[in-house]
Image (cartoon, rainbow, N blue to C red; front, side):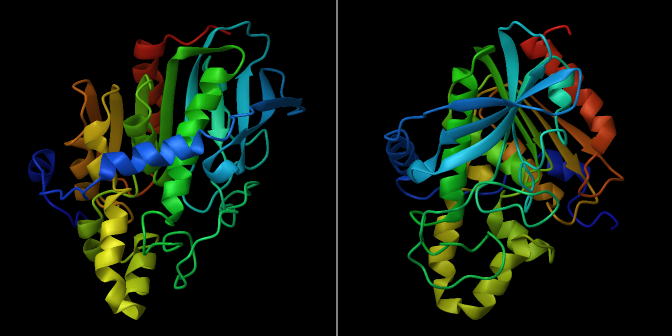
Length: 328
């Protein structure tokens, strides 16, 4: 994929008109209040990961609607705490997988909580959390993007974002974790969820946001033919009459809308050949980020992997400046 979006100089100044839906803050305040009516009931059980340098716990806590959400918590073996923590959210279609599959932040000295995404796990990694809250809308296309999309109340990402805020609560409540040093992280879908968690949980200390999905929907839906955005396009091709309701729903979870409410230090990444999460949609969120300590790493020749191993090195260094990892 060649460069297909705006030139970098224009991307750096890209601040499109963003129409926020009426009652957005009240909607999220009510959503989180309803979610927190269920006790967190954090459960941690140590599991065998067959690794000498990391200890892993199977985590369960109450998310949206009381759903018991699964996660892994990885900590450096033998660590006494209090540890800074990274709460990581996953890319589209993947779940938390097996204990040994994803624990790099624990090796860098952090407590690393990996949240399972409800109702996903059919793609690149298995999941363990059902999306067991029914929706009232009838139409949908395969995937997660159109589940309950005709109303913010029933939309899939309302539930996921509430789960993410509770994942931050869970990390802050976990033994060994320093609640004042909890960051959020994620790429693609996980990046969009990280934006939401940082916007909706004021105690988040830092945010690592890589090639985020779920941003600037009005442009994304008309600029790329790639899934998952194209799931919404296929839906609207069949349900023309739902367009106004769908766009109103998406505005409630749009990273370019919610980013204005996030004030934690952040490091974004963007890839200029990314046809899955187009660069202008990433910059739309980054440029509206509410905090002053913000940086974006630009990868001119990368696609949706977004700098990958090279960017991971930047993330370790950036995060260490802010959260001071524990030596192991």
